[in-house]
Picture 1 (cartoon, rainbow, N blue to C red):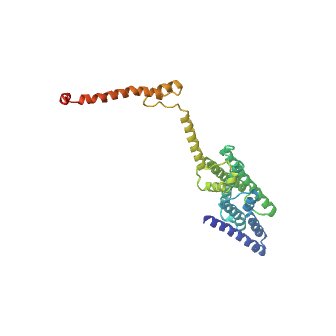
Picture 2 (cartoon, helix red, strand yellow):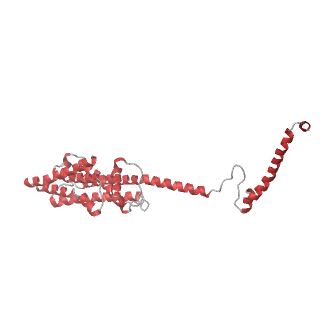
Picture 3 (spheres, rainbow, N blue to C red):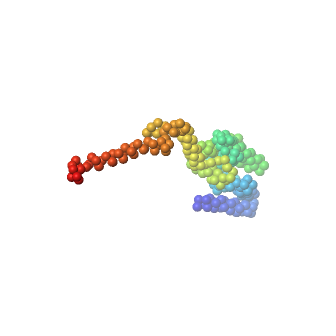
Amino acid sequence: MIGFEKGRLVRAVRFALALAVPVALIAARWSTAYLAALTLALSFLPALFERHLRISLPLVFFVWIVLFVFGTLFLGEVFDFYERYWWWDILLHGGSAIGFGLAGFLFVFMLFEGDRFAAPPLAIAFIAFCFAVSIGVAWEIFEFGMDRLFGMTMQKSGLVDTMGDLIVDCIGASIGAWAGYFYLKGWKTGWLSHPIRDFVRLNRGRFGKFRDGAKRAVGKSILSVRRTGSALASLPPKEPPYGPSVEHDGSNSEKNHPKAEDRQEIQKPADDERDAKKAAQPERNRPPNADQRSS
């Protein structure tokens, strides 16, 4: 249900952009038409990434990218949200930096096929941070080019605006990179771990060397059982509680376990003594004057 609502939100944004292009052309607002068309084209970038990179993006990535482009180019420039709301620029740069930090982490993690031993978590997080900051720098270059070529005011106050955006990008990139680091360590990071988990689940074939927390726990349990079994097998046999241990060589085996012939010889005197006692018992039980009466 939540995924359906997000998908409907993306379609609504695209429909609004597609409607804004002809309206702006009819009103001769060329810059608005250009920005609306550019925003609409950029909203299809996630689908192009999926097709060319052969990956599956979670729906939350679609929503983030489309809303970022829509809020930056269309709402920010056409409706002048940057001037109306002082926090609009900070919100967009911070949110996009977190998203690009997560995207950079997943990209590097995917290159190593999910093998966290080939590249330590801290190294992957650092590369993800650099990737996100690089995207922020490229965006500032784009803003500079738009201002110079088309006479726009995307940089607002120039150097101060650019440096403020880069600082916010660094903070957001660090948040996204640390979220990836904590994910590899098995620590929960709330809503930041959901996109990572969904991406790994949808692209399981590209993370062949990665095992999630449950599989790692099962693997550790199996390894512990095997080690315990090997340790028990290597221990010497315990002595029986009723006597000394029985050696398995030939001499001691014959001493502690006599042959059948020897057992019969040991049993024969005991049987003869028992028969003699039975034969003597009637003599003891006979009355003393029994012979006189019979005569």
